Length: 567
Image 1 (cartoon, rainbow, N blue to C red):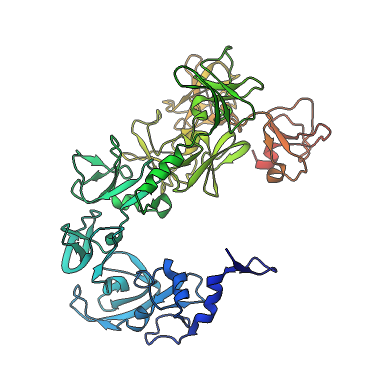
Image 2: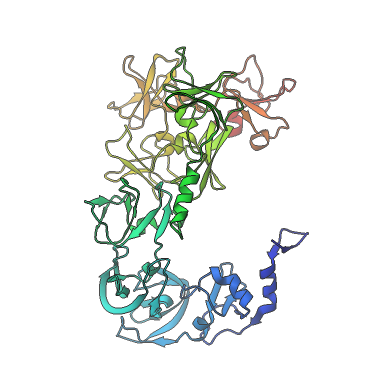
């Protein structure tokens, strides 16, 4: 709504935050001397309203009362008044009877012996025994209520020794909370577990349960270890869907899930994901199939067809893979789409990130997953990620002909790809039974390809028993442990890049934004070959490979793709 802004720079501030300046009262350092800067005390109700969405930097509980914060720290440092003024300098903790433990501060933080986690800020500890407890564990709340997470209050239960948390199934130490109504014992952090989440790696919302009913042995769909039926987990309620994950596997990465406050939100998310990329259905057949449509990727109507009239190597303009089954075509220009590409949803929650992915059509764009320039349909994931349709069709758990076990996507995997030997940067599909990993680029390779070296189609091949191998195209050494294309009839084999080229998924004539890829005032077009003996405007050599050429017929601007991208 209304806000203040500076016309000389990009600074802006809304009305509530602007009025905070009238609520400041500068305080001196507290008696504990546990922060390196002076703290600002805020007592205005309006100010408290602004800070409600934050938690105390020490006890990590919501901010509901007067607060003090540091205006100099780059990372928000904010405290309850009671934490600052009432924090004891010495305590005797029931979990540690050897010595009293004293309040300390360390810029590098401390490892809490109770919750087994690293914390930053003040802590109580014994320097003789190297025993430390963070503030939240040292002074826990006696009763926790949060009906959005659990319908009954949890009560603090101090005990010596370990226990198994019935909310997440992981061992805990000393401090636990119990619900006497449900007869469950949980970690402090598990008192606020969300009941419903939308997990990016599953199509439906998943619900927290303390035990699973009517199920045989189930493995977690993330780590593939067993999910104990009598311990907490997240599972899907949809009939026939047996998706189950460990609590800590589901909540490990905040980028991969969204907390759902009410169950009706699940229905709204599902309705949105069912929006089609078909703009309008013009005709249907007796079976109810759309035979003539308008699609967001093309300006003309598209017509359904079940086979090509001619035996030609025609590619889908959505995924740039050969068409071999039912497809749509344009009667006014050479434009084709697989039926599966046409029916992709306009919006989806892709498993790679818990954010909206929107389908777009682009003539020439870089895919951030297979690391290739591509033409066709893409999903825009959030603000930063562009994913081609070939990558978007890959599930997070897959089977590959190149490996005997199924593979699952591991965000932390940083091994080398067993298909191409390249270093993996954004995670990979990993085998849970052996050291095998594949990146998006190898998983989305076409299973067969044509090349002038052979009259037959070359097949993607995963194993070579020869000790030494050579490429029949470039005549250079080929690593027999990596994937390649081969013809068993002619005994020919070649590097993948030699068969496909550097731009296998870019359509000739694709329009390239010249401002994004080169400093030229007209749009450019991509071509694999150029007629005549044109010279590259960048290096001056004759153009015999992939080029970008100005779309204006009166402009002779042309340059090699390798002059722009180095290959």
